[in-house]
Amino acid sequence: MQYLKKGTYFGEHRRRLEFENLIITDTEYTHDRVDWHYHQNVYFTYLLKGRLLEANKKESYNCSPGSLLFHNWQEPHYNIKYPGYARGFHIEIESEWFAKYDVDSDRFQGSIDLSDPIIRNLINSIYRESKLGDDAARITINGILLQIFGRMMKLDPAAQNYLPYCVKTTAEIIQENFGKSLSLAWLAAKSGIHPVYLSYVFQKHLKITIGQFIRRTRVDAAKELLNNPDSTLTEISSKCGFSDQSHFNRVFKSITGLTPGDYRRKLIKY
Figure (spheres, rainbow, N blue to C red):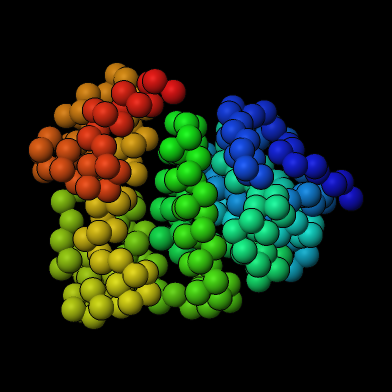
């Protein structure tokens, strides 16, 4: 069985950022099949494009864009890439990082399919910050990782499978329809549950209101579109479901601390 040292994946790195016992890579997968192997360090895999099958000795995961897996260092697994282009984002964490921040990595055994929408949004934030790569981004990434492990400790891996179906469904509907005008009544009807109960159970399990989740999802989508200099702020505002440019600026700044224009200028700078 092959043993992969830190920062090593089967593919071509589009971008690599290494600091403070973290190795962050954006990788295009080039192998149709990767036989049994394991990695030196703990890491997250966030699929950006394409489809993969990833399997360990206990279970297998059919991964599509947005899928998020966590692997502890001792977990052997293999991968199959379905036909077509595939690309993934990895956050690899050395043992020294866990010691520095007093996080017990042994709490998280084997491989975990992280379906929690809040953790996925936090990983999305790390992905955006990694593109900036400055000192502020590095501080932010460490802080976000601590939030993620804190949430993973509260959400026992086995318990994640019992996240209420209506909560999972509502989060997925929002992520698929963030560019549209959404209402609580419409979301409740799509999820097959009363609006009052949906509001209650969503916030209870995800620790965020439905409205806040919608705003964060729209801002995450806008961040991605801001990478394209050919897209105007007006176009991005419309695509991401904001009512107008003023609304876009206000919500974006309330979440990121920057206006969309300032955020784009910072991306270009770095």
